[in-house]
Length: 410
Image (cartoon, helix red, strand yellow):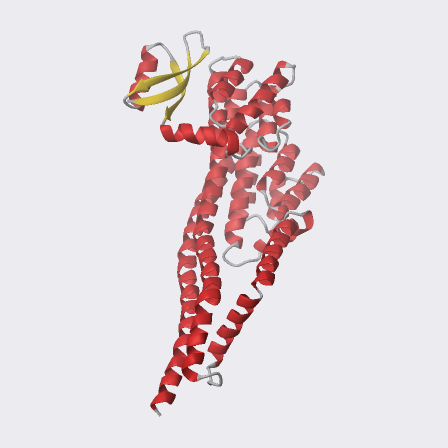
């Protein structure tokens, strides 16, 4: 038997929370339907998930996970679409939430809504959880009376953005791990192995033995690392901290984002991710009825790249002065021609949001292909680099041994 936790609507369209034991998910849904309930959310509870919940409650991050936010958005959309009052829906989500961080945020949101604040304004007080896109779409949905539909769009958009980020991070995980292992292996060899090899060579050939240049370089590096590690490691740590701190400053972030757009192999992926995010976010905001200028400003902040943010803010100024967005985008090399062409079609037909969804789908597929291509290139390059390092160390060891053995034979 498996234990399930659920949120469902009864015959009066009121949310009901509970737990039940059934052999599988299908049986659990059938049991709820048999009782006259309409399932909204159904989660299997295992021993591991219970432990994970308790651990996060006391020691976990305060940041709401993207997957939990998407699930909450979909559930809220379903309940509002079924006619459940907003406060009742929020209370049900808060009571059922398995994310302590999200639960705390919802407690505050519920109090604000009870005090007369709109949902959009209540969410805007938590920018670390609900970004500008989320808040503006909710506000637009409240104004137009289509909050349930807007929440569906939001959940879909969040899933797509999260999918792109996961793919990019996944592509970077392998080279990052290999690079870290390589660095650790290098320092391990320099500290523990090379000094012992140097001692053996000295014992064999004497203190005045003639050693190859590559061996002398390796022994010199090893000597520096062994004798000055208390300076080298804090200096490396300080340098890494300094770089990370600098790229989080406005100037450093600006320089970093300009740089990544010029790196071969990385630049195409960054550009395609930015264009896909622009198309997806702008489309969602337009579909929600947000004004074009507000769409541009919000999308600029949502892309995550300063260069594109500046370009979209500049585009907003030009649109405000009477220019067509498609013409403005056509004159900007950051955006491929297909974007301006599709925008022009959308402006002519009045279906900009629908047209941009197709652009987003196309570039998200392009991102997948680009990441796969990059991954296939990175792997052999890393293997070559590691092989080269091992080869240099092997050569620095074998060459002097060969020379010493030749001298002994003579």
